Amino acid sequence: MKIYYKKMDEYEFKKLKRLRKSAKRKLEKIEEKINKEEHIRATMITIEATKKSEIARIKEMLYESDKKNTFLDMEHEEYEDKLKEVLREYLEFLEESYL
Image (cartoon, rainbow, N blue to C red):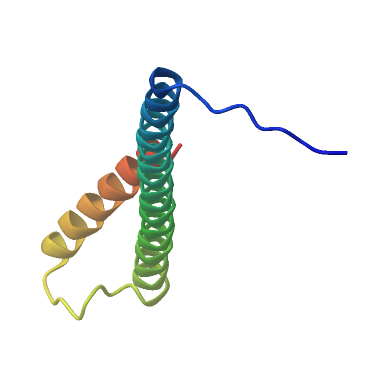
């Protein structure tokens, strides 16, 4: 049994080549979108982790200052109170933006 192949005409051949090129371009665009989305997600995860660690660090600083009744070895109580207040406001801001 012999198999005979039909020769493709020139128009159909060029049409298929164009389709192949356009399919490659579409695939490249899809891959670019996927890479961009993966980068955005990784950045968001990093930002969230940074916020979590910053919140924990500030909470620890405030806890230690209340425990020892001193803050960063400052002698003047009014500065210490202002600094605690600013840190609490910053902590509230971080927690609100995290949620």
